[in-house]
Image 1: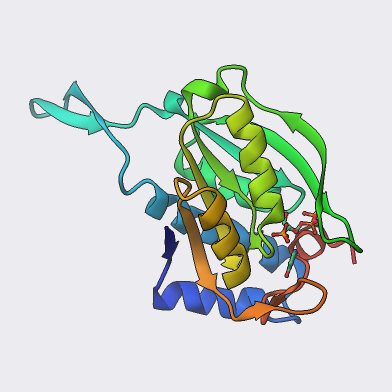
Image 2: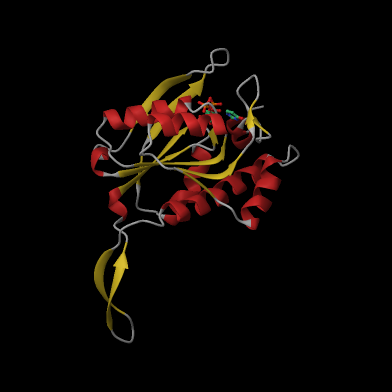
Length: 207
Ligand code: PRP
Ligand code: URA
């Protein structure tokens, strides 16, 4: 299942984000902001626990999120750009990291780091990566999480290519994909078109 944020403000923010003249500072701020909106959408179906609180006026029953049931897992490097946004929304979630880079010739992901909370199997995992291109990195990251016993995973990205969506949906139909936009296609170098270029390089200013 793919959920695309369709909203004029998101399109507006993506217009600035995609622009090649947008600098590192603004790029980072926009990745953070859009990640917050994606997080809101991804928690639309969150189950709340009824608690009793006292307002200055009276006692009342109200739903609260048990933030301890969640973990955010960015795929390094670019996923780190989204972390600030999602922890602004859910500050008590635990955080894991998956290090992955795409080999420049084979376009296959290479895993170089994996560190997640030790009770990860009890948590719903929100996997973060701004770009879903071929889907290889997302699938390998989901493989790793599932091998640790994680049962519920949501994948949040800014831009998704139809090729990557198709592949993830085929291998993991149980993992919903939340994206800000579905783009047209991949080019011969497996970059998303029109896309925004290399997300990691633009967030960290490495090129
Ligand atoms: C980018 C992106 C994803 C991956 C997507 O990372 O952030 O992780 O490519 O491509 P895929 O869907 O074809 O696997 P990259 O390898 O450039 O590493 P970086 O985050 O360190 O820049
Ligand atoms: N990774 C990126 O950062 N951008 C793309 O378009 C594809 C993979």
